[in-house]
Structures are given as structure tokens and as C-alpha cells.
Length: 135
Image (cartoon, rainbow, N blue to C red; front, side, top):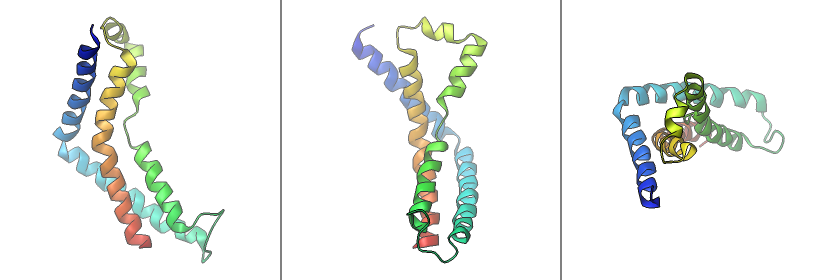
């Protein structure tokens, strides 16, 4: 398969994942509500650990909460290994290997498409709560 066709296939996988991610706004809304709860809990839990101290182990409260937002943004992105593991167990991986495109890059393109939808929402929700909590 020519390189241009492979790139087009990966772009199609990416675009399909973005469309699928945006096709269910209710799921995105529920995910945002879940993240609001998580960030609200942690934004109100961590100040108790600081108990009037300016820093703990070199981090201010604001820095710790920003770290929390960054890590949760990464954690809430799709998990590539779950799909690959399921395909290996079911035997579907053999079908994918017969295709003239790279198996890993195909999944990477799809999961990047999902991450493009989910990561900005998670980050925005977390950043808003941290901003409200720390200013």
C-alpha cells in the first residue's frame, strides 16, 4: 500500500474516533459531571493536608492541584491496551494483522481521536475548579 494511502487510512481512523466521541454528548456530559465531583473532592481535601503550611514537599497547593488536573487529564484519556487486549483474547487481532496498515498506528490514530475530544474537556473542568479554589 502506498504511503499516501496509509496516511489517509490513519487520518480516517482519527476522524472516525473524533466523530464517535462527539456523537454521544450525553456521555461527555456525564463524564464532565464525574470529573467535577472528583476535582471538587480533591480541591477541598488537599487544603486539609496543607493545614496552614505554604508548601508541602516543595509544592504549593495551587501547584499540587494543577498537577492533579494534568494527571487526571491523562488518566481519563482512552486506554489503548484494553482494546488491544480484548482483540488478542478474541482472536480479532489476526484480522487486523492481515490489513496492509500498521496495527499499532491504526489504534494510535483512533485513540488520539478520542483523546482530542476527551482531554480538553477534562482539562477545562479541572482547571475551572482549581481556579475557583485557588484563584
